[in-house]
Amino acid sequence: MVSTTRSAYKVMVLWPVLAAIAVLYFAKALNHTAMFMITAAFLVCDLTCVLLWCPLRLLIKARCCITKNFYSWSLFFMALLVWELYILMYSERFWEYSNETPECSNCTNKLYTQYCRKLT
Image 1: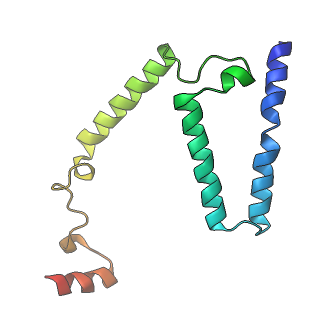
Image 2: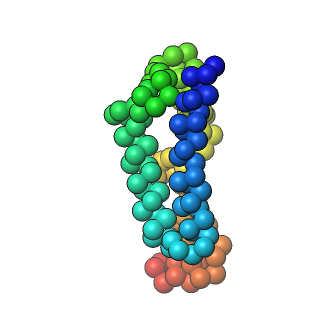
């Protein structure tokens, strides 16, 4: 129990960094471009940590993030099932030639219908 608490304290140190970034953004010290770059950096770090090297093993003495156990396999198969259901239910979203929504004949926006008439 004590080791778990120490591990939680180590992770808790990271939260003020995220809070500081949010405060800087809302104080208009960071613009959208800076926030995008920070988000991209976090994404790269996250992918590196999960796929290549798992620092949680060192930081909180936990097992690796991508250990394949029953729960990870069940999530994988549920995602696969949902994917297949969506393909069956909404095939027009996944197959370019069956999607009729973006065609000019189905357009409801006045600006785009004028543009579509020029194309035809």
